[in-house]
Image: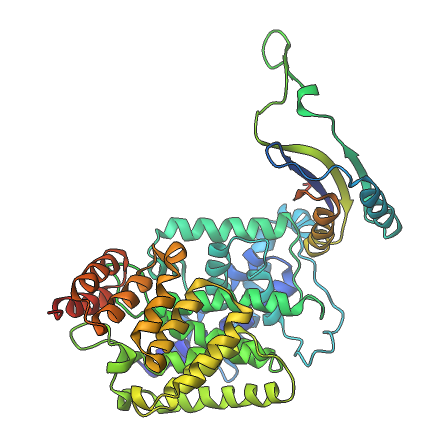
Length: 107
Length: 411
């Protein structure tokens, strides 16, 4: 079972910026224990572009699809046997990256 | 009620959770398990009056339910592949060495009370899957529309499936935290029964308190070593023992000091005291008691006293001091202050209560406690204002009646 783990940051109360070494160590462990599928940090939401090509012409717009105080700062994809395992890892992940995380199963 | 109807009711109480739990394991799907169990009981209602109650009703029901489930899966045979995919994660390894019985019902409890589900969903799911209450029964108990309860249960089941919430007893390391999550669900059900919140419901909902006790007994049977399970059961029994003395014939709440102690249920008190003694022995051996054990011990002190003056208040306060260390909530501090009033007088207590204003200004019991203390100190006007505020905030009919009478007795 694969889970998307979203790292959520808060513009008005951002998590600390010195977490990279701890995150790298945590990623090493995820790989060693067989949970790691993918991980990546994201650039600021101001770097986002939304494309809507449902109509006649593609429309590009600058910025994220929704403006909010909380935003997606990075993602993991984990392979875990069940939600209990994923939640346990996510509990550590939140501590490690000093941010909230959301766990969501893939279909 | 005929003998057969009585037998069906009893079997429903005793076997529902077992049937649902064993079907959940076999088919890996809560939906199928619930529906098949309900159909099996419906068959029993239809057939037992004519055929007689089978010698082993539990086995009859499980066999019937399995057949119903297989029928359903065949009917929807396209679903079969999907069904296999969606099977719940079932851990077949033997239970951890906790002294826990490997019982499917225990897995079911932990699944229904999973921390990834919203509290209302946990309550509804637990009452439906373990308690065997119907959706309309749960809706009535919590004063919400049946469609809301149905939705909560459906969503919870969908999340369990989609997110793969497992069907197993948590590991030894996670067990205490998860048990405490289960106990929180049961305590919430009990409290809703004990002090029903709605202005249009009975002040005490015996159906809910009884169901909470029944489920806590079940968990006690499954986890006999767990101190907090024993503590919660003791707390519920010692509270339930006072139920009939707690509301007067005219529907008014009777406070502890005014209750007819002869009307308390001696058998429940004896059982509650046995549980508290068991936990005191464990505490003496160095096992630190948890919150429910301390609350049970406080209730044991109350139920040991012949009247309010005979109560060992210093013991009650010592127990609250212990509780404050575990639970720094202002409600605990408020209850401690009520005991302080009996030992050190209303003035000392009032000072302690007034310090809680910031946190408890919206809580009826804060104002009711202040009102009583002010009344005892002879401050009638302030007392009246506090009663007014308490009445405004209280939702329970019996409590409102009691507060109004006390207010109206002020000179």
